[in-house]
Image 1 (cartoon, protein in one colour):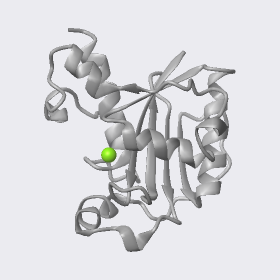
Image 2 (image 1 turned 60 degrees about the vertical axis):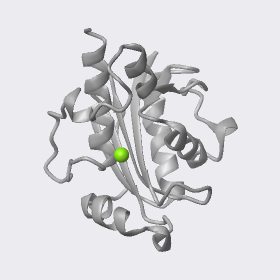
Image 3 (image 1 turned 45 degrees about the vertical axis):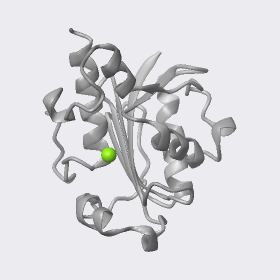
Image 4 (image 1 turned 135 degrees about the vertical axis):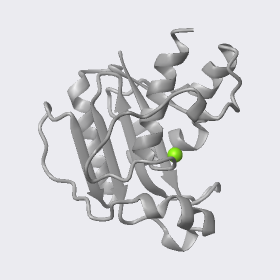
Length: 185
Ligand SMILES: [Mg+2]
């Protein structure tokens, strides 16, 4: 099973929230990052306008890509991003070949499932049980509220992405580094 670290940015902590961006960092170093063009802009409050929206590239497209391509970037509607992400996940193999990890994952996981039309419509690669990094931190004695930058760092760079805290791919890459560090303890 390949571990894939997930983060999403979205338009608020409520039931009608919409997905702004999604980042996935696989343990083998492959990454997928997408920005959605059809999120509900009227829901974006001041915090989102200050912390999340400035980091978006805003000009990405969901172009064709190969299974060997380590970095896949995409920008488009929910449907376009969903198709691209399904195609990206197919490289990991068949049924249950991927397990998803996220940090305090309650919102990320629901939005991830909704991108495919709900939990029953997940790509076959995705194992139906997601795993929470914050729970692992608690079990390892690190404290789930520990500032994440104290536990890991993002060394990965990309010429056109604004990688910083609250960028979905940055946050996913930070989860991956923290996971690797915490398991050395
Ligand atoms: Mg984030």
